[in-house]
Length: 96
Image 1: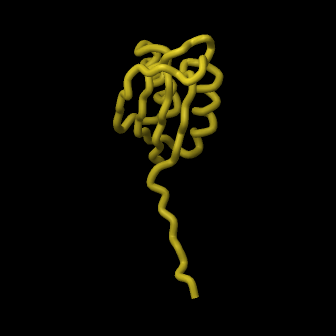
Image 2: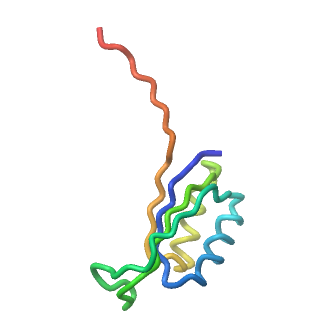
């Protein structure tokens, strides 16, 4: 399992259960949860001018990431999202 930072916007608090169900569908696990509250949007999304912002740290199998993103796009529960992989370890070679 890989760790990801999942930042997303939803219309209301009721949509959180649907997002948790989608994550569970792909055997993902929520590690931490942070609510950034309700904020005004810079531009309307589906005729909505405000949204609830959330940042979760999640664990998800790399093989399931593509399907997870497709499900989020298809269901339209999440207005916008950003999924970033965390803890990438890169080995650097010394310059000669």
